[in-house]
Image (cartoon, rainbow over the protein chains, first blue to last red):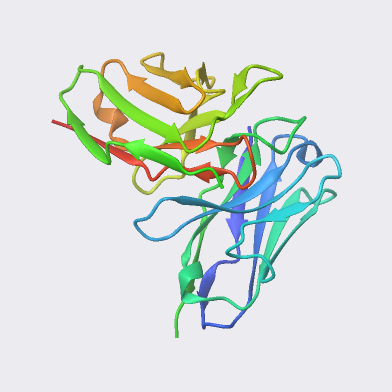
Length: 122
Length: 113
């Protein structure tokens, strides 16, 4: 059974930093691209960042480029998101999601975690 | 970026009736080399993460009831719930994964009338 468990969210002041983690199990983690998707309160879904499988690289939404860094540790089956220079508009529930294809980063998301809440406020 | 526009924003349908949600992309998401539409649909119930329903515009994810179906090609797509059930009350999102950044529609809220 595929499981994705996010952690690391919390209340942080503007300009601060947080590191989110996503522990994955139930599939060959290294094979698949992994994603962070966020949802601001009462809003829709926004892709934040992705990291390709099979040695692929990172990609970022323009809204977080230069502030957020995605990484993955395939030996620990864990995805990370280092979030720096946080702004009020980064307040959201952050979901970790698994790519549905093992042959491309251009794919749908077949499994999602429950999310971890990040609140940026003074 | 490809802009995804869903309509309507919300709809209320009687139990056992058909619900239809539309999604339009600002450019084609049909990849000519494999003739696949890079379009998926998700269901999100309150307090839950999104759940994949449909991918490649019309392929139903394993375990999804067959009352859910996807259709369309190019820039215009439809999610149909053939007979609305109480457990289908949710917000539905379309997503294009044809090009980066992947983008989502604004969502359609489905309720029981």
